[in-house]
Image (cartoon, rainbow, N blue to C red; front, side, top):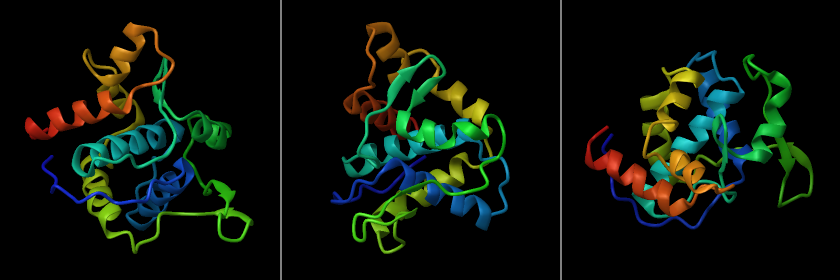
Length: 171
């Protein structure tokens, strides 16, 4: 995937906002296989491609190197009750502007975010959660490096380097 070199964007989002944006897009495009595994991997790919192209993360939390791949624990707990089933509702969170608990998404006005998001969605929407998970488990991926080092968290620097390499290879 070749992405434009975007100027830095100051907004880093909560994982639930990015996940909800994928869930919204899936409904718009009639993609019905967004389960907890796939949503984790889509958010991970978005995070990696944004680091590679804009130099900043998509989410403000660190991915953990769980046995089943890169995971955002907060996001896992929001969707774990779906198990292997399709996610049918948005995750809720506290609205920083109002203090209300509600479903929030990345605003469409964030053009820099959506320049990456739209390409990530197009590239990965047709893959299953298992296929996306397999991509993250390959030798030399940030997840595999963290597991080899015995780290709980995956370094953003490793994620960024990996996705820059993918862009260079036009994968």
